[in-house]
Length: 345
Image (cartoon, rainbow, N blue to C red; front, side, top):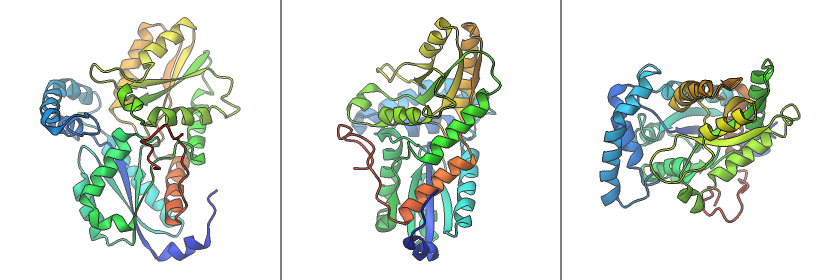
């Protein structure tokens, strides 16, 4: 339980704006190509000078549009991420108001509406006394949280003096407990011998080697989850999905992990460990494509644990992060010094 200090009661009269950052997604088929263009022209994604990055982003977004449209058609034509994030924003706002804070929660998408520039304008118009930037990426990466923070700083220079940023929360107690409970509830009726596959969005190895702590933090999250006595005897593996392009990426892939399950005569239960909301990576890649792959491999079982969504414990973890920043609690550095891109620096 979060300890309430004297500073908390002093801050009850403050108007607080909380900004939830997420990736965003195309709302319909027409929005797919603009979404891809926005994604691949981000210098945190393709690390090339603009003179080279923009033509490459144009080429990739053009070539991938039809494939991406086909993916989104399987889930209604567009991404459900906006609606999922809206629900999380509402749940968090209600949680904070219950705790006595005058808080308004805004959602801010990096590559699709509502874009950062318009969210900055809305936050500014709300005249807050304090702003809390809170990513819906539990594990910090330069490709996600750092990119979102940089975009915010570009448009909100006049607000930075009242802004605090939560870089990550991979070991938050409520966050870990939420995963443990969802996993335990999911597997309690499964009779087949199984292996837990913790799936995270992959990133290129050269980004990891540049000091990005993402993979380290994913491992920290999984290790904490598996300390639960109810899960400790179950074999598990971390794996990565959603690879794009010819570079070497984090491994093993889910496909490789499924092959290992086949060799060991184990079923697979996939846990989305870096995704807190359902979208194309969970609803299509995990629920359709890899389910079909598991059938091809004749696995004795394949299923997926639901994403955290508006799970009460997860929303509590977000609220706890807000309260820590409201009280100016120093953020402890989790990553070893070798991770020079750590967001706590």
